[in-house]
Length: 111
Image (cartoon, rainbow, N blue to C red):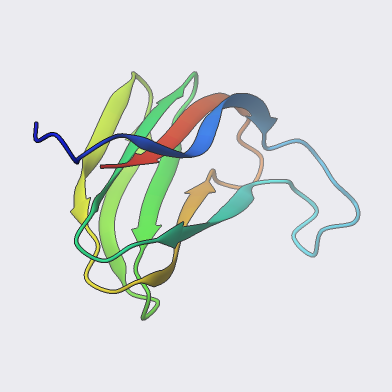
């Protein structure tokens, strides 16, 4: 690790419940969550995720393309490094099937 590289936390570790019935959503379930990220070129993104019943995790780049995907994450995993090619916005999408419920803990950082 060089003198000038450091860990920049983009999303603090947080826990939440997914998959509950929500009548305000078009699908009637709170089964998809999207988190936008402001990123810098030349860095890499890391995502730590754990779930009780399985969650799908996708990392989306600046152009809207899926650059990293992990299906049905149940134990703790770290996805990365995912290289950042351009400065701008990327996103993390977490999803479960409608009707499934899970407890999710995740965090995102850039190095």
